Length: 222
Image (cartoon, rainbow, N blue to C red; front, side, top):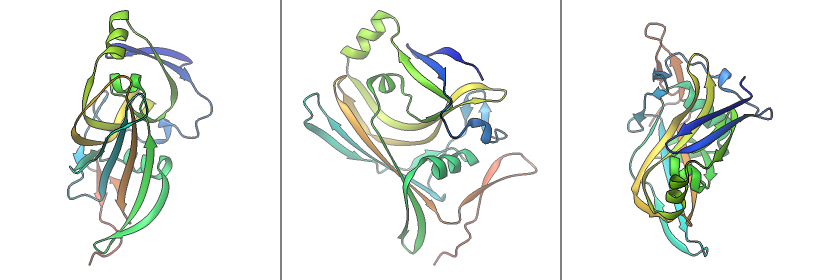
């Protein structure tokens, strides 16, 4: 594995340092059928699938005063691949079984407060095979990051790995649209992701096409 690398996301440099304490790795994820093109993955909406994605955001100003609370109401999107199951099973905490309209779901949650640098470049890793350190870019860009408001209408959960044959890439495993919100550089945002997966859900690779598809859940719907 590379011991040091530096890449450019937008206008902010990101330093990547090898990390030996991670308990999982992109090497455990089969990449067949994952990439549409190098660095790009297919995304499908949650409508009519076994996944549901919800996001609550709480925004506070520099003084800690509450500015806004928003909950997503639109359908989310995710990668139709075993990678989504891996993130849900291994990296989501606070698991429990809930029942909605007679259907059992596993519920996983993830709490996250993206930093100013992460918000500026749109990178929100739940996991990275290599530790990511943000380094200021050109002076003008640093001034812009700390001095200008920024609008947001989509939030993502990234999984960053060194993918065999594709190099290091951060993939948006889950994402959701939200009403447009404007954040000051000094604002903070707290996110609570809630992801539901129907009990019995799983992915299987097609022997004919090499793509991944959902298997029918093992439970009977009412």
